[in-house]
Amino acid sequence: MYTTLIVDDEQLMLRYLEKNLNLLSPDFCVTGIACDGLEAIELLEKQSFDLVITDIKMPEMDGLNLAKYIGDTCKHTKVIIISGYNDFEYARTAIKYGVSDYLLKPISDNSLVETLSSVKEYLKEEAKNKHSPTRDYASHFTNEEQLKNTFLSAIIKNNQDDIQPLYSFIKNKDMIFTKSYSCILLLSIDDLSLLLYDKGIYYSSYRYELVRQCQLYCKNHDIGFTYDSEGYPILLITEDSEDQVLLLANSIYKDIRDNSWDNNQVHITGAIGCLVSDTMKLSHSYITAMESFALTLKDVKSPISSNHFFSYQNFIHEVHALCEALYYDYVSKNNIKAASNMLLYVNLFEEKINTASILKYGSYLIRYVSRKCNIKSQFIRCAFNELMKGINQIIVADAIDKKHAQELLLQAFKALDHDKILNTLPEASRLIENAKEYICTHYEEQISLMSVADYLDINPTYLSNLFHKVIGEPYTKYIARIRMEKAVLLLKSNPNEKIYVIAEKTGFVSAKHFNHVFKKFYGVTPTEYIKG
Image (cartoon, rainbow, N blue to C red):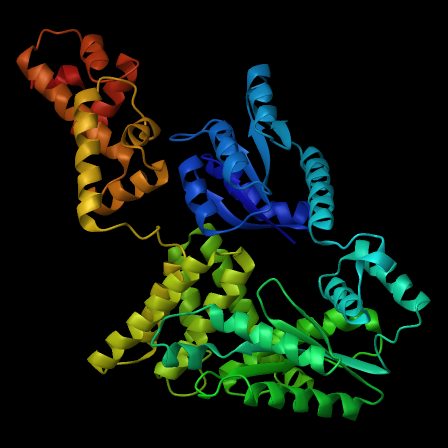
């Protein structure tokens, strides 16, 4: 599934693509939406996207400048531009910035499907060149262990380009990859114990250490091993009978759990996927193991078995459905819907609501949405820190009920979308003062947020955040307010001045636009204002 960011200031187009992209091409999933280029950059700094579909004409930053930014900073992200302008210069600039395709409005479903198909093939080829071993397997792999682990990884990731040649190579060498029955053992750090042990500070180093220890254990015990994109260790358990597989999986889990950390403060959770007799179905065993982690919310003892998975399928389905709904709320930035869905999520708590249950359910939701949207680690940490901050406030207030739990989880959930943390206040205040000074001396010119940011030598997204945080309003509203204040002074000092002259002196390209903005601010036209 390829993650996709939609960027368009037209709400109809934005919502159409958001709701229909996956239907038109099931390989693409919308994991972010933005109304202009600057919003898109904010998301690109927080999440990783395989594809960006952007309109060309937007306020603040247009599609071409966004494409240039992506080409400079996100080398592996593909860009499709949608434009209502059949202009050769636009197309030529788009090609210069490495845009994958340039579609003219109104776009048809067929043309979009065709373009997405081309992008998919490009992404597949790029991933194959980046991750796949060379086709000269005999010289590439130095031992059977490396070959088997690569084959396991290809199966889990469903990488068809590698599965067939690796399978043939293993068969030709008479290697035994799996016995009669197999399953996947998936391991993870228990977030609840980690949050409590480290007092709310989330360290990814624990996860790297778990992968390292599992890798070493599997090497010493001749067990197939790989890990997924989230860093979950994946162990291949295979034996000649179903009972032997389960006994071995339990034994391996206990060995790794008991020898991971001396202080025993950080716990290891494990989930055993369904048993399979067909090697190619190991990906299904991996999926059931991953979904079984939802049962940590019910305190099912690790390692969670496939029997637990089938016994609690209704609960797993409910958790998955609500996490999917909240993930969609995150993408669409629908805070009202998120609040109602969060209350439904809190209603899943079966035990009395307490700090432990809030931490468990909060951690699971943060992980779920972060995994779906490829959210970067620093923003995941923000969400965990917000979760712990809320827990500490509840402990101090000594008050906890469903409403408190809903509000707390909602705050942690929203923290995934928080703006980048600003630098120290003195620096922020200094930059804003310099920006205000520049605007007040250049308001009569066609200055944009980018031109002010260039003058200050800072990132435009960072400057946009500063306006929101320090001044309390976006840049566009601030400069419009300054221009209106200057316009009123000019009108008062010279009531007989032509309106188009006032418009020019306050940075407007036309008297019509000036009149429109003036009436929006003061409720009357400039002429009516002078008469009044």
